[in-house]
Image 1 (cartoon, rainbow, N blue to C red):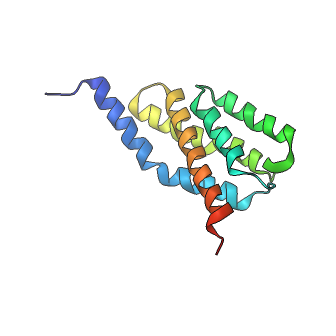
Image 2 (cartoon, helix red, strand yellow):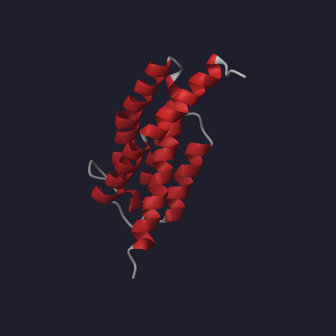
Amino acid sequence: MSISTEQRIELEVQRSIRQVEDDLVIWIQDALDKTKYGDLEESQFRNLVRVSDTTDSAEVIKNFIRYQVGRDKKWGRGKESLAEKLIQDIDGNIKKTAGIIAECSQIDFKPIWLELIRRYLGYGSRHLKYLRDGNKV
């Protein structure tokens, strides 16, 4: 039984996404380790992950981050903030990587971009948990 061209392309895309997961983890860990933000709670970060899981729009995700910045200082403010770094990664590293995968696979870029954003934020939720509770003795 042979697989269709469409199935082959989907498998290739998923393989490509798995191959860039190290980059996603490194980018989000750098964002959380090297930016300024307040006492950000895991539940607040999980709300961002939930938004990313329920939309097909990167702009909606960025809008939610900006909304959170407007509500309180837990996401940081200004150029050195976590919020700004998340948006920079979404529009920079992640978008570029999604474009490369889409170009190689000759399929639509947007679903790949969203999948990478979702994974990036999911790994961020895990790393924030480590930062908040994993360092305790």
